[in-house]
Image (tube, rainbow, N blue to C red; front, side, top):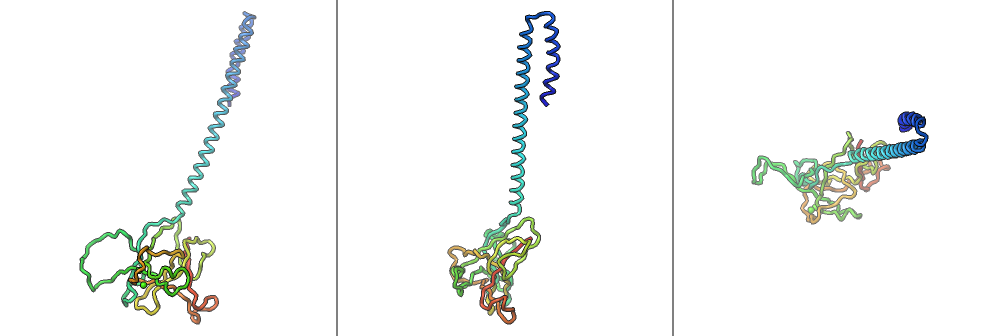
Length: 245
Ligand SMILES: [Ca+2]
Ligand SMILES: [Ca+2]
């Protein structure tokens, strides 16, 4: 772009130089110097413009790269799990025949509506939850009688979530949210419970090792005969995995 611009600017000067030479030979040297100076100035200007244009392109490329990196980072961030609640696991107590089945994740900041302060009998109840892992011989037995923390997470850009018992990995095409162990209530307690998949890195609430019971989590074993063995094994605790897609 700079060269045509330079050519059209030079033309009037050349004509002017020829006209001057007709009237004054002594001025030829000055015209050449002027022309040379002008050319040098134009070349320097063109070079400067070229350098500026290259710098501008390089800067734009850098901006485009950063923009792509930010978009990619945003995509990755949006696909991550977001914890929307952390609290205490609760539920019905193991000894009640009319127990509610599912565990609850109770928030640390409850809000109240209409209520009475007295303890009443015609109610359902919520107790805290404990790990009942005393019969295990591995590191999980250290959680025995500890209360159970919980988290509720939102997984972006997923429409289905499933829990697969007896698996530690998801099937092809699914995303693994976490893997762990299957737990449920003791088989001979009054209360019905539901199978729950707890994280393999489960922790207890610090200082909660007192044996208060409530909603209880026991490891789950398969029973051969009604279940096919193999692939299942009598007496072996079942794993689980939570998968999304
Ligand atoms: Ca406890
Ligand atoms: Ca207990």
